[in-house]
Amino acid sequence: MNPKRVVILFVLLSLFLFGLWLPVGAAPRTQQYLTPTPGADGRIIYVVQPGDNCFRVAALHAISVDQLRQLNSRLDENCTLVEGEELLIGVVAAATPTVQTNLTPGTPTVTPTPLSGLTEVCVLLFNDANGNAMREETENAVEGGAVSVTEINGKYSASLDTVLPSDPAAYPGVCFTNIPEGTYNITVGIPDNFNATMELSYSLEVNAGDRAFVDFGAQSQEQVIDPGSEEGSGEGGTSAFLAIFGAVLLLGGAGLGYYAWRSSKPESKLSGGGILKK
Image (tube, rainbow, N blue to C red; front, side, top):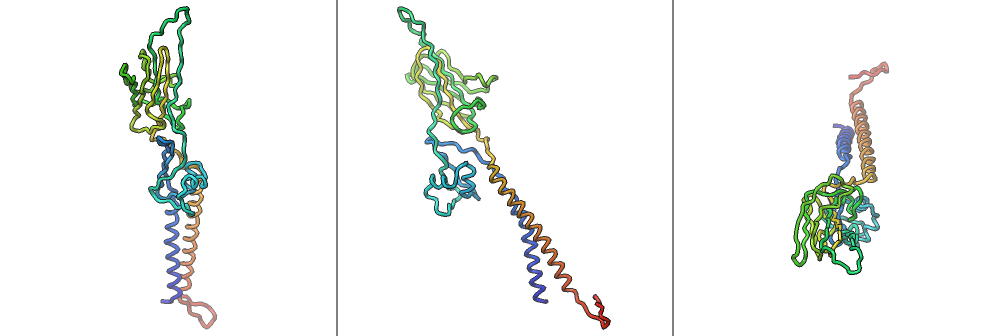
């Protein structure tokens, strides 16, 4: 066989296979990403996933690559990431439950009279959708949790389940009424499909006539964020370019194949100057 034809056929086959691979390799990847939740010490940790690089991790968490390097000084000059490696993304102040106490003093008289000695504690477990450990107006109560209130000297102990209110805006949470004054340990159990964004226990001292409100935050594990328009647009543009490039290669390969077929056909000249095609 003519060596020239062998080389042409080999190049044609290579271009054809490469052109078929490009659209497949250009398919964009989809991924769901859970909103990071600070740990008890306030540190936000991200576990490196397959295909991650420093630019992608920084974009996911709205920080710069330089900030990522500063938080993780062990990264080398090439910012090499290893699958399963833990990266520090940020540090927030350790969140504690927010407490609001309304005092209701008795009416002053010449001879002061003691209050009834009873008080009320309302506990709200809310869906901390943005994970900032602060309740926003749009973050409603979470059902399926459990709240326990226990006086440290054993004078009182009770527990209630969290529910969804009919009027979320005016809902103070589950309320423990007519309880004696003292120091209480308040603990909250969250549903299985939630992650805590705040400490789940709090020590509260209430006096007679007080009405205290304590908020605890938890974030749904189904809460996801889009990896971002910046990454998505970059991958989409690259994918389209690779697909078009693959199509051009296929067309070029087809043209080269046609040229090889035409040049391989034998021709013989006639004495009259014409061409006889066999």
